[in-house]
Amino acid sequence: VREYTEGLIVAVILALIIRTFVVQAFKIPSGSMEDTLLVGDHILVNKFIYGERIPYTDMRFFDFNRPRRGDVIVFIYPEDESKDFIKRVVGVEGDTIEVKDKNLYLNGELQNKPYAVHKDNAVLPAHVSKRDYFGPQKVPKDMLFVMGDNRDRSADSRFWGFVPMSKVKGKAFLIYWSWGGFMRDIKWNRIGKLIH
Image (tube, rainbow, N blue to C red):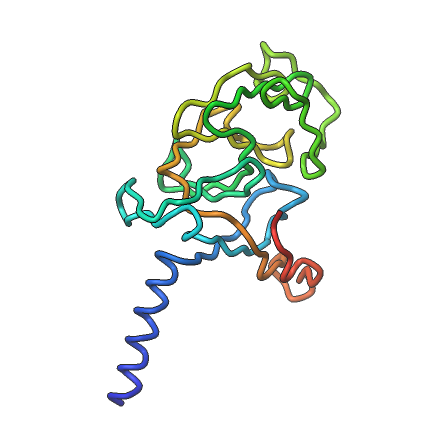
């Protein structure tokens, strides 16, 4: 009994250390990152890549890397810190972001990325919504501008602002499971897929 108890305690401690400092699992609850990530995808996030965040603080150590444009990141939602969000970094500090007629411009250059999709043909005027017309706006120091890959159905930096670097939890890198709730709904072709 003692050996099993010691083994269980060590396993729990290791699991907590790994989850806190190295890798954490998340589930995709919405379609804002379609078609890169689908509802029901279960992903792994590398928490070590951008430096270790000291739990319950905004301080980090070993922060040698910073999120780059194109990274898919998990972060603490700025408007409700009890929630985690996942989006793609489209602008880092110093970049100027503008959306015109649904098209994203980074520092004045049109961005045509294969992961960015539009599933609504309507173009909303600027006085109605920031979805299809935004900016230009410069990304401040230690901030990120993020957008969902499903550009027409994503609540992102266009609506609620920048993500502080201190709120970034890590970089999504792998889909380890994907299903819709029933065994027949397992999406086998997505399991093991790397996130780009």
